[in-house]
Length: 247
Ligand code: NAP
Image (tube, rainbow, N blue to C red):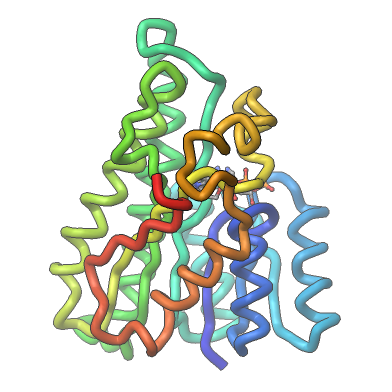
């Protein structure tokens, strides 16, 4: 059974990806930070459908938590095949001249340092250089990375820009070691992330600006993630897949 870690898989895009991955035969580690109930619900949905899953609490802002997440998966599920770097946060709508250093540092820590450290742990396990058998990393960026987030959250947009560049570089660094590294860049998707930024109606409010006239669903992102994670994408590395209704 192939093993996949999905960070931030208790809700939203991560939860949809976990259910789809389990249906395709992956044993899935469902990482979450505080919503244990939601994570356990994803595990129970997967188990009811005959799949294998494990909920693991770990805060992407803390290196020790990330190391513990990977060690738990080594022990409980076995050799890692795929990492989906999905956990990410936004903050209240603000201009740069209203942002505190604490806000910016928190954003960069969760959205950049966390994925870097998760990828480091994955490379240590997957790289043929370290005796591994290869694998795939899928980073979740955002359309905000190329749109910039002006007047809303330039900090979030810039954190996702860093993820795009990281994908480009890491893909080349480990391409000859059996690891593919790719990005999925979603546009606006119906999840609870918008409420966490104080803008719960964002999917509806953005519809007119999206060429397809609507926001996306988590499942529509999950299918792209699963494609990049699997053997059908065997020649894809350093790629960026925009799934955004055409923005
Ligand atoms: P969401 O519905 O808000 O869910 C966020 C998930 O991340 C939850 O499982 C949450 O765990 C977890 N999480 C938050 N902070 C964490 C931390 N410090 N450590 C570990 N886990 C943490 O988010 P989403 O909309 O599905 O977004 C998933 C990814 O897609 C993010 O990277 C986001 O930037 C990106 N994205 C989303 C959209 C969109 O419109 N939704 C668009 C473009 C890109 P708890 O349940 O424990 O809180």
